[in-house]
Length: 164
Image 1 (tube, helix red, strand yellow):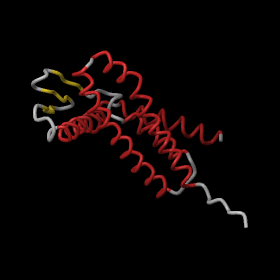
Image 2 (cartoon, one colour):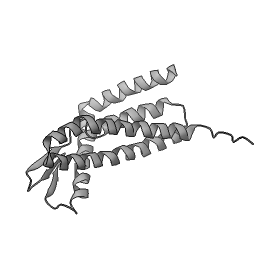
Image 3 (cartoon, helix red, strand yellow):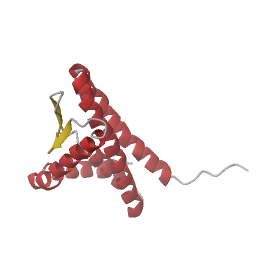
Image 4 (cartoon, helix red, strand yellow):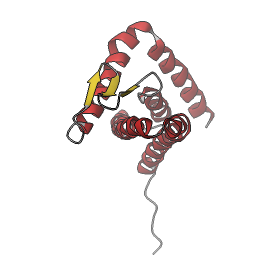
């Protein structure tokens, strides 16, 4: 257990340090965040043609409301926590890679739902938007990470023998 905790902690510190580097922000994080805004807006557009995305901003042109996807709201930090946990736990590299890819997809799918819900909550009631943004969604995103990791551990566990 101590090996897992030490490896997990070292990976967290290392991956968060790499993520914060300006070249990584410019080449990976900011373009990815812009892509998230574009995808979120593209999902909304068939239902609401007054929505536009520009960079990391999604705007409703008639309601005059916009959200900007900032650091901490793009799912990257949650993905880093998952990656550190998956790599720290003993498994084959193929199993780890599969868990990371599936987990990343699960986190980003929920994150797009989060972005779209916040976009409309903000237009409806800014106080509910703020509470949901600051308290509810961060917990739900980390629960998603925990669920993916728990399913990964369950997948890795040897099957239990059935009594005769």
